[in-house]
Image (tube, rainbow, N blue to C red):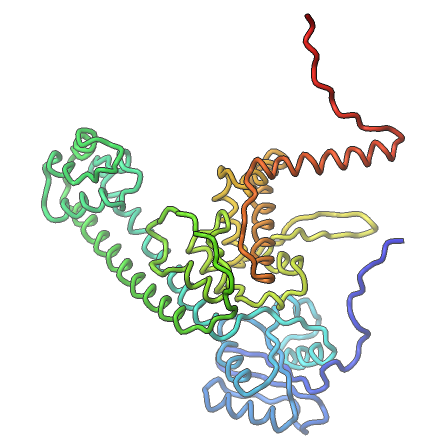
Length: 451
């Protein structure tokens, strides 16, 4: 008989000194155990002196653990002050507290949170340590700056198109070296197509004649004005991104190493640099913090590595097993079983940034000659590109979990070795199936040439 997994311990006072907080923008409702104060539910303000008053009252009531919902950003100051004062804080997913009839006010919400936490029915959400949270704040802000800069590139392309300047057709990237040189010359007042084409970089695939032909169009004053302002806005955000990169580099430098490197690591692979790539030496910083070079993993660029590290941290013991880690990332299927039948099996919708980074890494290896690339192509042939992306992202995430847990260097098998191992596994499975049915699997004999 199949052994089923138990949900948890019997109900009881798992956390007898628990408190529950319902946090809003203007007030915080707090509930403590019934025997600690005559007025067990109190309301506090959200100013810093009010927060200290709240924490003093919790300490006076003998509370040592607090649960709160992770809604908005209102919980962050309360969480940090509680953690600094030595309380064990449970940050709970708001979806785990929904669908309870009768809770129609903040007064009742905090009591319900306190009760669930006292009975041990709440699971805390993952949050990295303080240093990683600070790094994560910088990187999330940098991602927003990159996102805000992107529309101005579209404005530049739209202005060129309305003047019939077909620069995007002859250049792979309008904001590359050649494209920016030509755009800045146009903004400076140059209109001659031949002279503009002379700004072509030697590595550009298009010839000067083709570029000059694409730059022949109808120069309109209003579109030139839009082009000028869009380029200035692009430069402004580029400057802000560079300043943010400097702060990221400073944060990397002050972070304490989490592991000591004893053996020399293999040389890193040369990877193509994109304009969105960070200016920070992520490889050196990752090695200093974790003891492994995550940029060696196929599909993981420097930008993805720093995003993943800032989101998951370096301590993999926060997840009991790699399956828990994959489920937290949103890369594991969620099986809904009823009546002994699987109703549906699919990944749940999530906005996990680390999970999205692993999905991007899966797309990056789609055509690579690596083992991940061979795995992606095999899964794509089975069930399509979306299934292959999630499956490959899951495999890359498991690899990162293993590297950060055991601190060993990454070694790629290669597509050919992976296909050979996959063939051996299939042959082993066929032999077992044939033996179960009373047959024997015979290896094919080489064909004999008739004379």
